[in-house]
Length: 291
Ligand SMILES: [Zn+2]
Image (cartoon, rainbow, N blue to C red; front, side, top):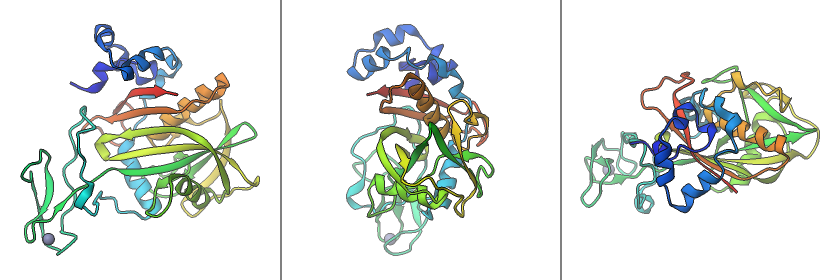
């Protein structure tokens, strides 16, 4: 049973979630769930949010943009998860094909004392733990508008996105978000506040999106962007946004902006296994918490 069946929350989860059993919602008692229920009316206007797509595109896109490996190989050892944090979605299969210690082929196996399938070296026995990656980006505000970049590179070439990319080792989330904004929009920004965390368990990504402002009123397309432009709240091209994470983020942003009260949002995006990259109904948004 998917988590969303336990969290028929907020309208913006989409029609499927809204049609879930209200009895299930009533049975929920944890503080987390109570928070959902408290705010379940906050996003009724966001029903359309379940539409667009493309979480899977995000991985490749961000990977290309940051130069990071599209695989999720960690350097193993002590980083293995201590508990399952994505009960709703089957974990992706290990992607590490070759051992990072000796170059040997790996095989998929469940190591002794563990429960999950891992990539295990057939030569030296090293277990390769694969952990989620952090994607960081900015909603850059200027004159009541937000800065979007039209992608020059696949996937989702020609679609609009927020400047965002994989966080690098050695930098903070804020530093990564400002770096990505500089790279993709040639814009120097000052981060104002955290705005949203979005987990995408199936693909092992967590987004942290900040609100930010331009230090100088200048921006221009970086090498990965065809175009950069400011959009008013009512002009955001929701029908041509590159990734589900961006759609979700901007829906929440517009809702807050119109209410004149920015909150911090946490939510989980669940990609439906097997959904195509461009399937507008290929995901659900769950677990929406607000500050
Ligand atoms: Zn090895």
